[in-house]
Image (tube, rainbow over all chains, first blue to last red; front, side, top):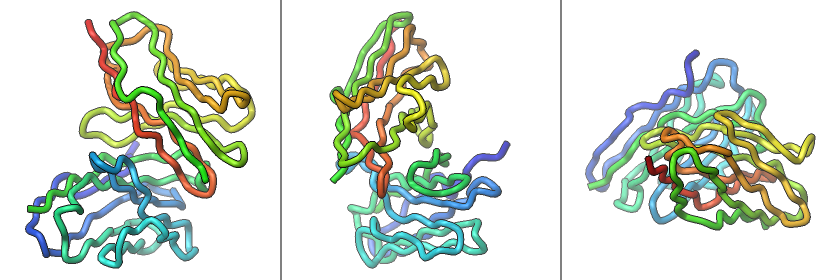
Length: 115
Length: 110
């Protein structure tokens, strides 16, 4: 069956540009999570959507980062005015019933490189 | 505060020999605990999950983990390593958020 799909798989952009990363969760999954994985910082939580509730944005590193989830399905993570330290792999995950103790299904990530 | 420590950043084993990946957690309550595996250029895949129903948890691909509250440990084992087990493994605790260990990279020698 279809898993979590992320696009693009790789993105190279110049410092200062805006980027949008897309995540298609598994159909029927109510919760969606974004993480960042970088060499120096390991895996960091960014943002969590659960159904129609207000998202948990507590992991977003700065106001340059934002995310939305339209219609309870597809999500877009936007990074404005990119900086070199934003270079990382951005992972999206979804889970059937939400909550931090639910098993999460991960996409293969978007590898973002800022020149 | 919740924390997860994976005691080995790298583990090297020969094919067919046992694998042991060590994980200790710190939490003010009993969290749910997970092991995930990540192959190169892939996302994380769930191996197994502990939720207090049983202290010995069996996962996919022959892996299992034992929860020991007295030692605050959740070590992952496999009796016989396969070449396809070469990957990075993450121990994860779930409380009011997910806390990831630093990862253990496993090398399997033929």
